[in-house]
Length: 235
Image (cartoon, rainbow, N blue to C red; front, side):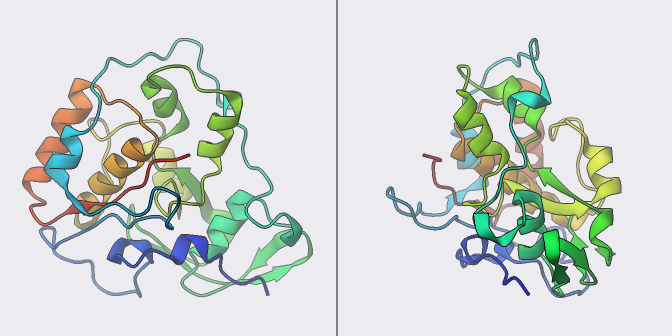
């Protein structure tokens, strides 16, 4: 059996690991976005959510010319010899109960908790690996056009536990390419975490936010006084 990938599990903050199946925490419970593994710049100190939102560059979105094919995914992942692409590596890393792994990285059994809707999923085929900030939103938010290599790096980023997340296919289809001004998870207890991870991912990748998005995030922050964001800029 392929072991869970360690890079996604290095941060010690609470949001890094999927919780054991328990009742969701109260909406006002403290939440924190976990830090990715230490890189050359080192780990950043936790930043209050309001302050992290203030760090976001504010700019209008630009969708003209977007195509998902601009962001090559899925690549061979962190372990090119394991027969699993990035998508399956993320699914393996986020399993609550590890699945069996057969030739060609075929997964059977196992279980996952989809944080968007607090749904327990026991069939890997019913999971999507979501880009936390959707690819179309990334394109909208690039402050200058990215290179093909940087777009592929974002689309397959496993060096942060926030960029990619395994969720139920239904919740991911509901989200589509919407930002927090247009969509929030159906599980309200996850809203503080969702806001922190969204902001942390945008800061990690130096992505802008539009005015409506910023106002929605500030509204969420009002209900999340203890929430902090930890991020490390992507190379």
